Structure formats: C-alpha cells, structure tokens
Image (cartoon, one colour):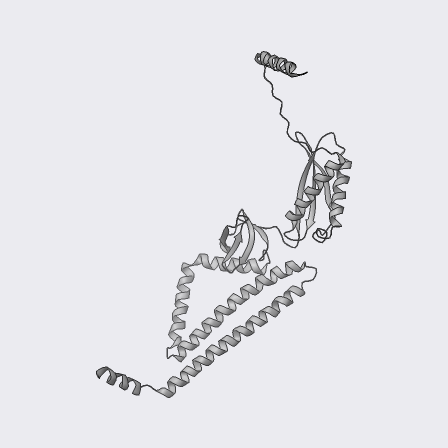
Length: 305
C-alpha cells in the first residue's frame, strides 16, 4: 500500500503535457536526424559519381579510387557531426543544460590538445595526405618499408594489407616514407639475361615481337598503355648479357602482365633457339685424385660394350 501510494503521488506530480511534448520533440529530432543522414548519403553518392566522371584524362579506376577515399572521409565526418548535434539536442529536451557541457568540452578539448599532440599530428598529416592525393583506397603502396594494398585512408590512420593477408596500421603522423606503386599508371621493369654468343639485336627484335603480340591480345592488350620499351644492354654479368626493358600498364596490372610476358618470351626463346644462361660449376679434384679419376675411367671402360 505504501509503495502504491508513493507511485500515485509521483504520477500525480508529473507534468504529462510537458512530458508528451518533450517526447514528441525528441521523436521529431530522431526522425530529422535520420532524414538528414539519408540526404547526406545520397548527396555523397552523387558527389562520388561526379568526381569519377569529371577527372579529365584520368584512368577510370584512378578516379574511382580517389572519389571513394574522399567520400568515405566526408561520410565519417558527417556522421560524427550529426550524431553529436542530435545528442546535444536530445539532452536539452531532457532538461539538461548543454551550456556547461559545451564549456566543459572546450576546456577538456584544450587539455587533451596539450596532452594528445600525437593525435593532432596524425589528423593534420592525414588531412594533407588526402588533400594532396598522395595515396587512395585500392592503391598498392610501400609505407615505411612495408608494402601492401591500401584498404582504408582515415584522418588518423592508414591501413595496408600485405600479400600474406597481414593488416598493417600506420598512424599518419608516423609515415616517414610513402611510395605509391599504382598512381595513374604502373610499370613492370624486367632484366632478361641471354648467353654471350647470342645476337643482341636479334634478341631485342624477338622481345619487341612478343610485346607487340601482347598488345594485340584481347585480354592483355587493354592492360598495356604503351608499346614495350627496350632500354638495351644494361650489364655484362658473369655468364649473361643483361637486357633491360619496361612494360607500362594500367594500375596494379604490372605483375599480371609481367608474368605473362615472361611466359611468352620463354616460349619465343625456345622457338628461336636463344639460350638463357644458367650458372655452371666445374669440379677440380687436384693432383691427389688422379687414381680416383683413373678408376672411374676404367670402370666406365669395363661397362662400355
């Protein structure tokens, strides 16, 4: 009875009109927040299409990677800002004063700014990393000596996944060296060793013929953006004459094209009788091994008919 009486007294003191009005306003804020987020999503999708279609002279995949990176970051910033604004408005409707909260947040932000210099450095570095278009999602890059596919570019971190599937996370402020291997176009540089007895001009002609054959291929032709480049004789090695060349390809296609070129070149060399040298080793037994060699020769003579 006492509990029921207290509950009735509490319900009698509730201002139902104000509670209903406040609940309706909170519901309206939630609906507006959902609508604005949907609008922002549609707007960013249109922005991504516009960025993809208006980059003059760019490879479509390059434009898509840049647009995807920019839109992803804008989406993150918009979601954080909208949720923060909505939360403050709901707290105000619940009767909490947001002025002291904002003042406390400002003081706390100032204190955090002094204590989190690395975080500020990471964010600033990430901002310039994105604005200067140094790397995009989908690029293959080498960051601080570690290579891999760029899976995400955030304001604070850059995420790589290497060939073994290992994910590497780099704070943007710690990136000292960044090498983008797939910016606008890629290249496969090769060194082909041939025997000293071969005619270099003939070998170069065969290599150019293989490159021209690939340019005419239905699959590999569109992946090559220029004719094969043969730089010429690059070195005189111990057992080979080294010829250097390059294949310019669309981004990230250099390894696929390069492997196919080497496969076709091996077949062409076999067909033309061009020797690909390999290391040879001669064994010298010395003066003390003469009886052993003689025994081998006698044994061979006994077995021969």
